[in-house]
Structures are given as structure tokens and as C-alpha cells.
Length: 518
Image: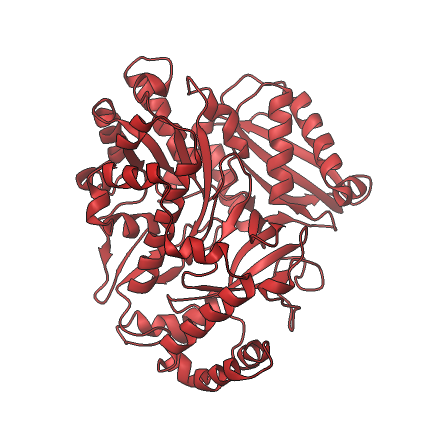
């Protein structure tokens, strides 16, 4: 990556990065919303919701009038609402529905909650924004203390197939497949696995071809979802009968990951390495490139405030969301200048892909308000609260990591569901590990760690939450399930919380493989 390497070695930063460093979050976001509204004012959506009237609010001496106009004119949308009324029309080939021009691409969401795939519009403008933010993150590598030879290595991007399906008026596929098919020419020279392998639709075929070519590559950066990257490295190590992945890729220094928490994977991942590498988290959703890790060995990510996305923040509390994670009527909503550190927020976004006040379903928390740094806490519907225990995805990840560490066990996958236990309730964990494990000890420690991390859980375990079940399964069962759902490889992640219908399907699948240990 000679061109990028030259920029990295010189510490070059993009204008947008400097702009964000030296401008207030409020001013950046106000400017971003104005640009979005100007661009979309003549769309069907913009005319229907009086974008020109909203834009008048930007000229008033009251610095917040623009936001009052925006929120009073444009309602909150979840996927079903905006898709049924607007996005479905653009998929019929109608131009200028929620964003100017025709939408050529639609990203199929990974469906982690167990729902059918969603069709998220990917416009030319948001593709450019994603590419620009991606370069901003790559340039952040200049902050790492790495030998200059590293800058001549390859970047391996493991994603969905670039062989997109054409549906008459648009192309559809994984976001990673869409973005990989649009890689800039200057980046293609050192991007792996290359066009031929990237085009493969079958995950097993793609995996085998990457294993076959691995010895010919000089990989320094890997980008992808942890589960599939770990599986790839295990297969490479087994194929070439080496001890670690560094025997094949000695210059591997950085893993850029996203989509799920890396905590459950880190222990098993590091067994495949001969030396420490840098982990950089990225928050790239189908709806936009929202944040990235800007500082090495820093757990939080920088929210991107000046690249095609306007954010609003809904406190993730019982006042705003019901027990099923559904948004209530008239929730409390804040702008970027009104958020507080330590409070969990559900994200509303408006983007240059034609999403307007769209509830993305993610929950974040600010760790640094001045620099707009965040961590992902989970999903609005990826939590368990059968009886008031309010167990978040973050609680689950941390408790599982603690337990696995205490017992020296590698856990690669897991999922949880709630169920009835007599007249009361229980949690049911399904834990994927290939290590021998004292199941009773693991279950007890996991329960104890959850009680330490979550006071509500601790209280309910003495009351309505009567039991915690734990089944231990080979990791291959989780991968096989994903294949059976047509969700192997790419951006796909195993759902961390199963609803009742999904749990029934999962149990039937387990029974068809083998009887789990109880």
C-alpha cells in the first residue's frame, strides 16, 4: 500500500478530520443537517415534510430553531414505517423519493435480531462518505508505532460477495459486497482477496480459495467480522501445518473489526497469534459509517460528525422504551450538545442515503463528550428484561469474557433467550466452545458475574427470575445454523438474543444435529 503508506509515514490527515478536531460538535452537526436538507428539499419526502420551511430555521438568531422546526415537521421512523411508505417506492425505480436521483444499490441487513432482511438504500453519496471515513480510519494507523516496512503490506478485507443480485431496477447484497465492489483504483492494488475471490457467492468456496492463496499474500491489515476471520485463520494454520498465523503473515499488525463485540472472541483469537497485534474497532452499519477507533489501545470510537449523518439521541430508559425494546410515543430526544457521559442512548440518524430520523436500533454511550467518543452498548432489542432484570448485551459480553477467563476456556459464540419456568421465568444460555469445560462450574460463575455486573439481575434472581440454564455446544453448530439460514460469512453475525419463535427453530436445529448436554 505504497500510496497510503507514504501518507501514513508523513502523518497526513484529511481536511474532514482536522475540521472535526477544531469545530464544536453542535456546529458540525447543524451544518451537516443543513446540507442534507438542502440536498433533499426537492425530493418527494422533502416536499411532503416542508424541508424548505425547516431550512428557514437555520437563519434565525435562535440557534436551536432549526431543530425545533425539524422535529415538529419530520416524524421518527423505524424500518417498517419508512420502507412501506417511501423506500419501497424507490425500489420500484422511482427517482428522488427520499434522496435525489435513483438508488442503484440496496444493502440487505444481517438480520441479527432474527427478523427478515431489511433493504437499506445505498446511494452514491453515502458510498463516497463511507469511503472517505474508511480512509480517515486507515490514516489513524499513523499513530501506531510500526516499522516502515509494514506500509508495503496488503489489506485483507473479508466480506460478502461482490456478485450482487439484480432485481430489475436495483442491485442487492451485503453492504461489504457493495462497498468492496466500489473500492477506489488506488486501493485495489494492495486489497485482497482480489476481485475473483471476492465475487464468490458461496462462503465455503471463498474460504477455500483464500486459504489456498494465503501463502502468496503479505497481509498487514485484516478487516472483517471476528467469527469469520477467526475461522479463516484457523483453516490457514491447519492447511499449512504451522503454529500461528504469523508463520504465514509475519507482518500482520492490525485487525479492524466491527459488527459485534470483540470481547468474547479475543481469548481464542490471540491463541492464533505469535505476537500482539493492534485491534481497531469500526462502527460501519448498513445505514452509514458512524464511528471508528481513532486512537491506538483506546476502547472508545470517534463519532463521525461531518460526513453525511445527523444524529439524535434517545435515552435508553423505561420512560422511552417498553419491555420489548419498542419506542414509546413522544420520547425524550437530545441533540449532540445535550448528551451526558455515562447515559445509554438509542440512535436516530438522518443520512445522505435518504434515511430521516431513522431508529437504527443501536445503543451507544458517550465516554468523552468534547471529542464525541462513544462505545457501543448493544441493541434496543438485544437485551433481556422478562421481569425487570434489564440485562444488556454489554452485560452478557463482559460476564462471559470474565467467566471464560476464570476457567481458561475459549468461547467463540453464544446466544441467550428468555423462557417460562413454572409460573415465573428463566434465562437460557447456549454457549459455543470446543474446549473441555466443567459445565456446572461455568454456569455458576457466569450467574455470579452477571449479578456483580447488574444489580437488577441480582435482585430478580432472588425473585421472579428463578433459574439460569446453560447448554454447551461445539462451535460448528453455530456456524452450521448460520449456513442453514443463508447467512454464512460476510457481515453476518449470530443473534445474541433469540425471540420465542427463533428459539424454537434453534432448538429443532440442535436436535437434528445431536442432543445437547444438560
